[in-house]
Length: 324
Image (cartoon, rainbow, N blue to C red; front, top):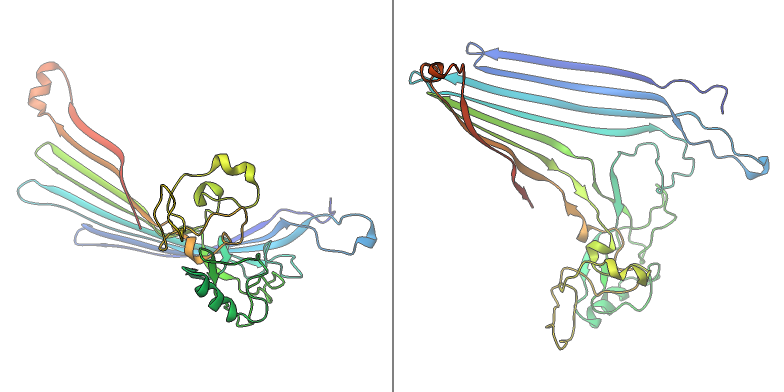
């Protein structure tokens, strides 16, 4: 244990604005904040193995989180006794690493400048529909083709894009400065989280609708259960998701030709299953979180039964979810 190990430090600054107008029928608030977390306990500094022992972990990692929260509301009561209200909420944040002991800038761990949730992967051209299309693609990659991922590329296999123009598809040295054809293709952090709360009441009747969701989020599944084809271990086959939307160049006894499939041809290999744009999922959603209707009986009626208030209502949770 390092003798200099100490507590992490958190510094936060916030700027906000609150508004009320039209006799507070319209309300709004906005906050923008930056939170810096300094001297977090990170991994040990890389030192030569000649020392004979691992160095201790120390306070060598910093984070910065920044974001905003917005809330806008309106409520009013009309002359006919109808009350109604609406409230909209929107929040967003990102977290960036501002200090980390990664001298080589290896992508397999954190590094300075990384935003938490980053998804590194390859850009997909598509699935080759014929051997000729795959041969033409490989011919455009004269310095090694896609051999860094495997061999025997044919129809039904993925065609990766040469984003760095070096005539081959590879991960380079898998470092920040030499990432080959890898790039940041998405981020798993939920962005633009929102909510909409609507309510109304009139002569004892009341209703409320609450919607919530996430405006932007990327998700990489990449498991055998998702692809329905194996990476490298045939014993995982029993856990596959059964489906028929995989590439088929020829008709079988039971299934027709499928040249426009969503999935590549199934293989006991991961060469078609590299992290890539084609199978990056859009995890944004909107959900009907709550829906309720009610009726409160008149007090002059409930008082006859020595009841102060009696409300009959119907309520449902998570009734609908919309995705892309």
